Each structure stands twice: as structure tokens, then as C-alpha cells.
Amino acid sequence: SPGARKCAFLFFICPLFCMKVPFNSFAMFFATPVGQASNPGPDDCIRLAICNPTAINKKVGHLLKFEADIVSVSETSATSIVQKAVTREMLSNGYSSFWSPPVAPKKHTVDCRPSYRGEAVGSALFSRLPTRKTRCEIPLALQESQRFSSAVVRFGTCEVLIISLYGFANRYKEGKRPNDLLLASIIPVVNEVGLPYIICGDFNEPLVKLPSFQFFKDDGAVEAFDWFHKQFGYKPPPTCGGAPRNDS
Image (tube, rainbow, N blue to C red; front, side, top):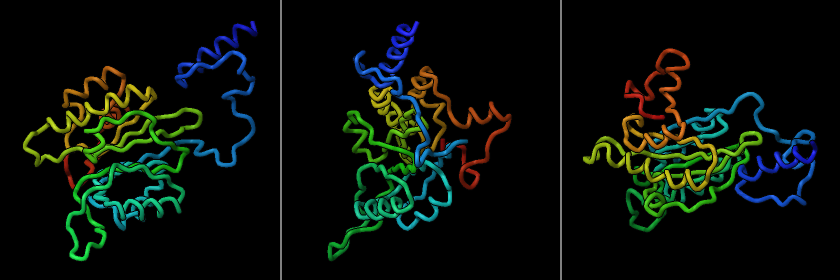
């Protein structure tokens, strides 16, 4: 009956948006595309690029060559002044920017001029799709790690949480423990946001070997290289100079 269809529709919308929709607010065009948007976005596919530029300063041109809708960047080495400059440049090319906190300068100048080269940390997300900030409490340790950035991107009518991480290099004596803790620290974020998610970045080691990956596996997540191998029957090439396939 028409009444049953309305109830089913509202039941579907409520958990999707994590809010209660009063019955008297029901409208026949609610959440229904009407006409054609002036900027509807990609029709066939969405391109997501993952890269490690070592330092993002003066490398916007390289990012634009990906022609990607979303760019995840690990190891930005971006101080405050670099973040501001890159944000302006990316905005002029149609991208919104979402950064981890600015990193500390690698060297301090004698006359206190701003530094354009920071320490080897930092992550960022750039998107030319409709995108907003992540509305949740970010654990302080995760935020201060300067290895985490996130945003919620709209794919058509579906919102997806995108997280960009920069893992710890193999030179850290703790071995796998720092990356395991880093991956585990985003579990509260994923749970609180409650949206489909994509986690990407340079992890410097295979994620599937980390104990904390079991949570994501149980949640239905798949690792990109494993998925590719199962889908196409062969492994993609190494990400850089014959290195292991650890950027996922």
C-alpha cells in the first residue's frame, strides 16, 4: 500500500543519515534526483590516486597530471606556509584540500623567515568532487601524529569516508608496532562516522600482516593489491623502483 511504501522509505533513510526524520517532513522528492545538476560529476568512474611526493612543495603540477578526482598524499613535509600555498593552487584547479596539522620546519632560518621544507611527515587529501570535513572526534594522539587526514566525499548520492595515512618507515626500530597502532587508532573514527570508507596511503609494509587489519577484514574491507590479484589474476607492478607492494 502507499502507506507501507512511505514507512519503508523512511526506515531506509533514518539509519543512512543517522537521524530521525519526522513523518510530517516526508516529501515525494526527498533524496530523489530531479533534473540535471549543473556539475553532476563523473558518470562512468571515479579516479583515486595515491602518492608519496616526499615533499609536496612545488609539486602541484605533478598531482594534476594524475587527472584524478581524489588524490591521497603521504609525506607532504608541508609547513603552514606550504599548506596555504598548495591549498590556493589546488583550489584554482577545482580541488578542495584537507590536511593533517602543519609539520615543523626541517631547518630554522636565522631571520625567522617561514620555512618551505618541513619534517618528513604529513598527509593530505585533495578532491574535486563534493567534499566536506569529517564530523567526528579525532583522537588527540592520531591528530598529533601528523600522519592522518580525512574527508567525506560524495560519490553520486552516496557519501564515503576517505582516510589518508602515512605509515612509519622501516627504519623505526619498533618494527611493525607503530604502523599497527596507527591503523588501530582510526578504528574509533570509522566506527563513529559510520559511512562506507576507503583507507589509503603509504604504509611501508603489507597491511594484511598487521594484527589490527583483522578488524577491517572482519568488517568486510579488502586490501587493494589482494583485490587486484583476485580480480585480474596477476599482481600489479611495485609502486617504486622494485620496492615491495606496500602502498595500498
